[in-house]
Image 1 (cartoon, rainbow, N blue to C red):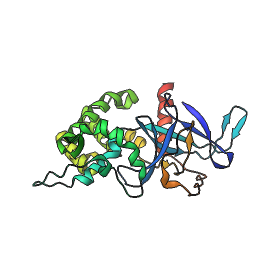
Image 2: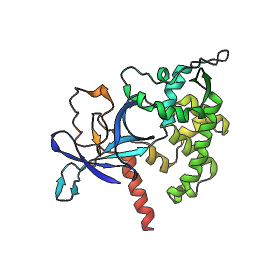
Image 3: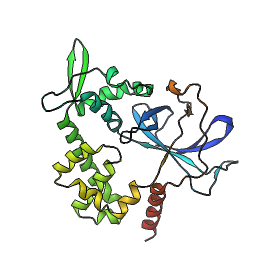
Image 4: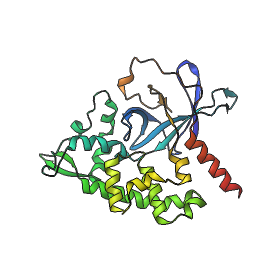
Length: 277
């Protein structure tokens, strides 16, 4: 679903988000791979990653209004476990002789300078048992990351993507399974740090050096290039709540005048070509 919203100064921007969206709260969180600040929208129990894309030339026609800035925001659903995994892994700090301590969610999700994580407590309570051991003491729940569960969760992601990739185009559908697995690992590598990828590759009998040595052309177009994250500022989407207080008082950042997002552009180009054959 594409819609428009007004930012500071009355300027309109275009936002593409899932059809079921009914407003949401903007959050500033760390990107699970790079650790850098990234923007997300929390809509109920659904978390969406926000990225901004703009070609060199373009405008939007919104009814009787012309939006000269042809850029747009894309809100893509993301599994919250990807975002929360680095926090639980950091708190885990286990070794071969110590499995780590059980901790409560409010402690695990406390990140200095990122109060937005506190908004994910209910999501974590419902989902983190998939990768954590959970203990209940005096009606309080305590969590500890379980490496074997994380690996099983990643393997399930691989199986899901094995069913999805062939639907993306003929190039993927014609791939042998090993090449397909390498592309899947490369894509998961956009959100998962290398130690987890190495464990996953070991389970799949694939050398991680082989994955990065000769990635397929289709996957390079999908996951490489730059996607400029949305400049963070408190903003309402369809009347959403302003829940992240870390930006209070900060002036909104100006959008870059020109940003090339190679991965999104190539994706659109591939879909167009496949539809004309």
